[in-house]
Structures are given as C-alpha cells and as structure tokens.
Length: 142
View 1 (cartoon, rainbow, N blue to C red):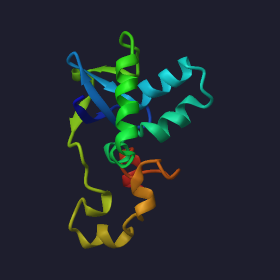
View 2 (view 1 turned 45 degrees about the vertical axis):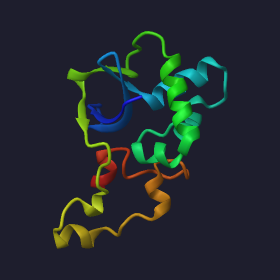
View 3 (view 1 turned 90 degrees about the vertical axis):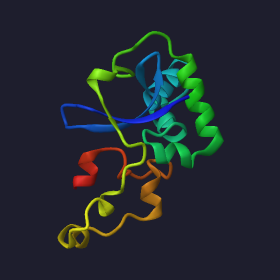
C-alpha cells in the first residue's frame, strides 16, 4: 500500500487527507474505513474511522500495526469509485507525506511568538480525541 497525503478543495477551503494509491487514483482511507464500518452495521462509523484510520499520516502511524491493517482492509473492501472517497489525481494536490507543524513552518519571530507549540496530545490527529494541526490548513492558520 503506497500512502500519500493529499489536499482536496472544499467549500470551506482546502483540506489535507490521508490516502493510498490504487489504479492511478487516490483513495481517502479514512472515508473508505467509514464506508466499510457503515456497511458492517457498526455504530458511529465516522467516529470509529477517525480513531482507527485517522485522516492524517502521523495519526495513522501513531496507531501502529493495527491502524495500518485497518487501512489496508478498508482499501481492499472498497468497491467502485464512490464520490468523496476515490479521487482522480487531477482533482487533488499531492503534498509532502509529513507536513511541518504550523509553529515550525517559518522562522519569522512574529509568527512563532503568536502561538505556542501544540502539545503531544494535539499532534496525534484525533487519536486522543483532539483536533489535529495536520488535518486542515484552516486549523493551522487559526
């Protein structure tokens, strides 16, 4: 499974997501997992997917072997190309797999002094139940 971080445009602005390459297209692993959990009749499929297959690379790697297995299962179970889950490469923008946290993005003193560095709990991309700086640009810009 080839993992990628990609950005997709939304009405609220660009959003970074975790994906995998399949047949020249990008599959949103978090949304694929939510679709799988819904098909299995599991309660709160999106919340379950956010925990087991987080929408960012750091969150997935933090989940270890179990998270990678869940992501692979979601990828393998996906049938067809559902909208919002499978993306053409032309409609997304590939990003660096590991983005620098916002507080490291620039050496400008005014930028670094405005906002303290996130704690370890917030850098885990929803695995700890908090909003992650790696999930959207809007979060980093706030």
